[in-house]
Image (cartoon, rainbow over the protein chains, first blue to last red):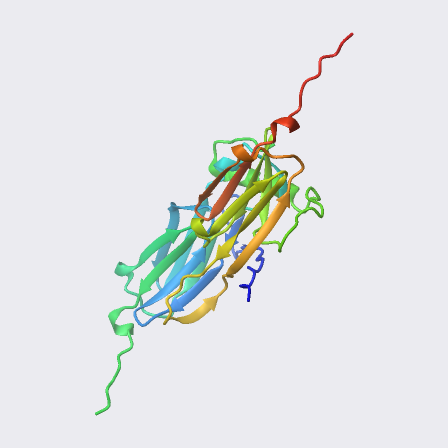
Length: 131
Length: 142
């Protein structure tokens, strides 16, 4: 059987509660969140964002990820047909688990950002053996 | 025409506005053929030539196949999600699977000069017009 087709997903434009001081439109990146025994893993689709343009913050249990796109290459081109728009990506999550903030790591591959949030020692579940 | 400005935010805003104007146009009409609407594309003019840009986050370069023939561009490949097998899922929004899309451009293309670049999940294909499609100035005899 043939593998399924990728579903077309429209880019979700961010409708922030507060107004932003920066010009331009922001999008909410499609995100998967997984949890293993040791860490919470957040993967976000941020096409067109260079790794140097990603800003990750964890403050008081709130994870904020921002990716800035470089529109420079588009400046010399004249759009004649458009199916999606480009813009910076921002998304915020409240992290329920205690995180060891010193050990957070992140990597980018093919426009997908992976943030690994290792659980703090007290948040890792301990298996208790019944005697 | 997008005007190059010094402020990067102004550049982005100008590009967004220009793309909005080109949104929903009937430039392709019914002419996009072959297996679905993924990936969404933007088409630009660069002088006489075309530039097709598509966002393909999570697609590896080796899983991507770009073909040019005559006046058509075909983008096919597959998108896979690499997740830890024993992880529990809290949120799943990303889509995966195969894709195959063919675009018909309004001019014959010079397949030998087509250049494709894939960086940060964005595919950029530069499609020069075939030599026979380039406009020629006509000498007016009087």
